Image (cartoon, rainbow, N blue to C red; front, side, top):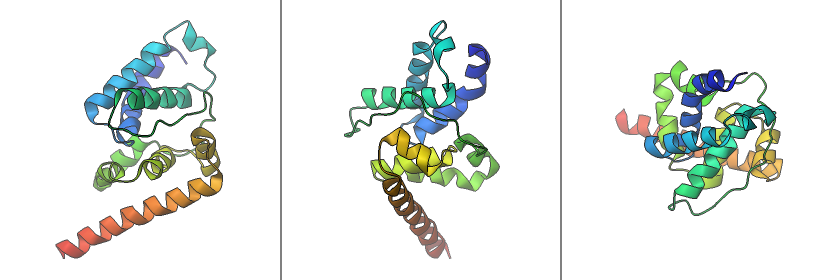
Length: 162
């Protein structure tokens, strides 16, 4: 796919992905812009998995520029594309009530937030493990804890409202 087409199709989803890792809109937009600028043609033609590559590049940029983020996470340069899953943006657009998930992700511990954000964006446990350079069992454990925290929050809100 041509760079300009890819930019138009992926920019919004990529901003949402960085936001799901704890960035605000401005931080996410800046990180995404820097990631795209770093892969302008002719470098663009050398990237085999642009969707995954730009997600890792944007996250690196966010972590580099956000001093409040204590842990800097190393990512794999090339990662497989997710197989037939929705992106975070699709997830939010499909269910307006799911917007709370994005705000709740920011309250999770870093590793749980990362695992959940990659999962929501369509990556498998094995792919997430490769991206975060952690065992698949650690991905499952962090996913389970994140999911439990989100469920506890959701049911707590329902209990308080009703």
